[in-house]
Amino acid sequence: MSRDTEPEQVSRPFFGRVRDLAYALERARTQGLTVLIGRPQVGKSRLLRQVYTDLRAQHGFLTGYAECSGETADLFLRALSDLYTSWIQDASYRQQLKLLYKQHKGNLVGGVGSMVATIVDKALALSQVTPPLVADIVKNGMLSLLDFQREFKSGGMTLPKLSYEQSRDLVVTLATLAQKPICLVLDAWDQSPALDREAALITNYLDHLSDWPAGCHVFLGVREGLENDPPARHAREFSSRNAAVALYPLGAMHLEDPAEKARLLRYLRDSVPAAQLAEDELLLELLDGYPGVLQRWLQRQPTTKDELIALAGDAQSYQYREFDNLCPGLLPDSQRRTLAIRVALFPEITSDESWATYRSVILEDRPEELILDLQRDGIFDGSDHFFPSYGHTQRHEAARAWFSAKRKINNPRPYARREAEQLIARLMEKSPAFSPEARPFVQALASLREPAKELKLEGSLCALCLAAGLVSGGPLDSTDRETLRQYAEATAKTYPAGAWLVEAGLLNLASAEGTPGVNRVFRSLLAINSTGDPESVLGKLYASQIRGPLDEKSFTADTGEEDRIMERLWKHLEHHPEDNDARVWLAKVLHGAFMDALSRGDRTRTRELKGKACDFVTGIGNTSEVFYILQMITETDMGR
Image 1 (spheres, rainbow, N blue to C red):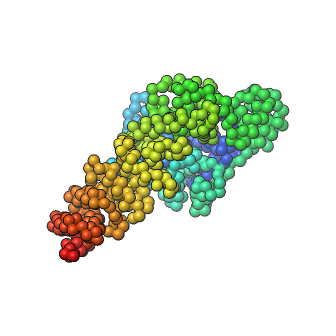
Image 2 (cartoon, rainbow, N blue to C red):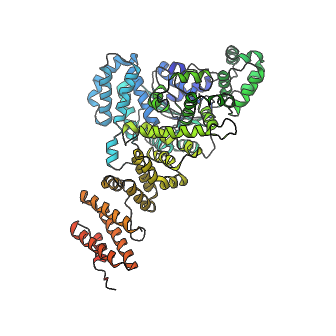
Image 3 (cartoon, rainbow, N blue to C red):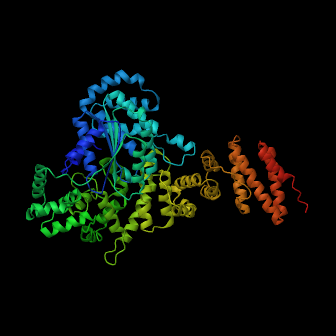
């Protein structure tokens, strides 16, 4: 959470949560996990932000906060970055930091220890400590732990993530240096595009609590859903495996206290024009303890009792009828229309840091004043920030649905399709290679999977988003897998900058499916990489352990493809003679081609392949398995 925006974030109305806040603060004093579960706009984020602020300001905690908006699968990494940033830049800890760092610097060893020493040295060397400078130092330090080069050389198919051990060591190191309890808040955890991966880290944390500082607590904010939804399933699994886990359902505001009720009513009459026209009983009945109604009234500022009642009903049923009135007027205005649609299609922007990363993709060369225009029009929420936002996940989803819908009059869908295409192209420009710089853009591209499918974009664009999803660590269903396979070669040819992404996506598919998927993936990889270094595809294929028993029965190809595959494998073996798997693969492809030619009575082809087998025997060393396969070729009688 950005320190410069935090006061505004916690200044929003906060009523009827004294009991819930007290419970959360008490939970934070114990080691473990608390999962806060509630319906949309019931106040989960507001409560978690208050917990975050109170623990730091009043209870001596070091706190880290991250909110998932669906574009990244690195919530723990961002929370830890915020944790270190707040610690380093807090003036009250600065003198203590110098003293404790001096005492413990000699113990900061290993990858994490060296990184922490580096960021502290850089921070202490600053002549003026400002939030952006400190955040940048910490961010670069954290990214240095993600070894992209190692991942690439080993055939890595997903963007590197912070490991469980690195996460633990970062918390242990800070607890040792700062000598303070630590709390991490992972808000909107259920929105992660790689939820299983995030859940695995939490599971490891729970299974090895004794390895973590005694004063470490983690909060998860989870939107209430169906009983069998993955977030709910994970939450139940967390609870069943460790007594240090608490599932806390956040319900209606507690307004039994007359003073609290009076404070709420007073605030309503001061802040909502129509509230002055309604009796106390009606206001409380319309609210029904649901903060979503209060937020809707504050955003829409109703002036009549009928508006007040209608907005309360819309809030309770998650409807946003204002878009029917506000958005049609945008369509003739290309500048405002483009920004409104792009923000709706893009993952939620929830912080200044996120906006700084994606600003050039969304705005391009358009003036930033457009954001203010859309805030004044009531399309964007402008209550406490400057970056473009629809205000809440539910409203953001409603805006996306409005622009994606096909309408008889004022149809926004063609505009939405065009903007989605432009966004994908811009993100690909920012992701030319497997690198730390490409990381946020690949993850944003992955989050456009659903909009791309909803808008029925052409297959190659969908394939880019699907491949990005696999590279980001997310799952794909069988239909999406087939789409990626079908359009892989065309996508790589149409969008050469995305060829590496498609390769990585295909490798992921083969890894997940095992031997049945290897043949198709291998063919596609060869086609995609037909003008490049043959070793680059094969090296990743083998290093990723997608070798499989490719035999003459499971592999069939035409003559040209057989020769191309054998040539690629041969060249690979010239570079990597120790790779016996590749040697066996080449022998099997050669044998399959030979037997196919023999069955067709193609004497010219069988002689050619027999000669290749003899060259193989003498040209590249082999094992007994390879020798046996080649012997079946060289000793075959072709005199019939």
